[in-house]
Image 1: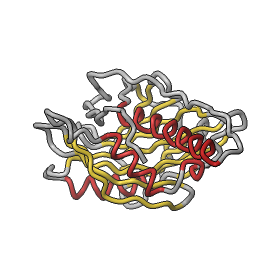
Image 2: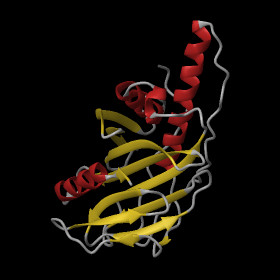
Image 3: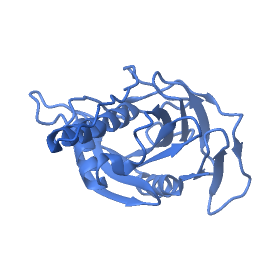
Length: 243
């Protein structure tokens, strides 16, 4: 599958919110008509995959200004240093470290973005981005298997082949479980430290339209606390569930 021609990096997180030097515009999936010829069906499938891939790439680049998320319940129940964050409006729950902060923001093209992050660390965080997609996007299987999707995603991010080289992206792992696609990869811009990304991608219907959920956790590979943040972020991303 050809790589999507989209350049992006994962934006760092500020102490009190997210910051980025670039803006993010929503990517609207393009609907095409399926004809009976086999070649046309294949083109339709590629367009559908490219549409979803474009949304996920835009999610990786999104960086909203955050405000405290006071309208969503966070349970007081503790489980090994974690608490459960429940979003009744968007119908999901996720476990987050007990001492992490919560912020909500808006990005063009996205219905909502919620981020979870430690107060003192700028580069380790988890975010949940939600956007509406067309009714013909019925499930993740509409876009092929997880391995093909993960390769397209990482190839779309990688710019190490350019001269001068851009961001280097490397796929670590991909799997499907719990109705979600889980993808692990790294990103490293020239002269910067390598970011480790753990993500979960899923789809749900809210009664009016289908929505794409992209859960993204990131930390710095060579950080002194990398092992601690890796464990926290992996548990958080894997805990994501629709409610």
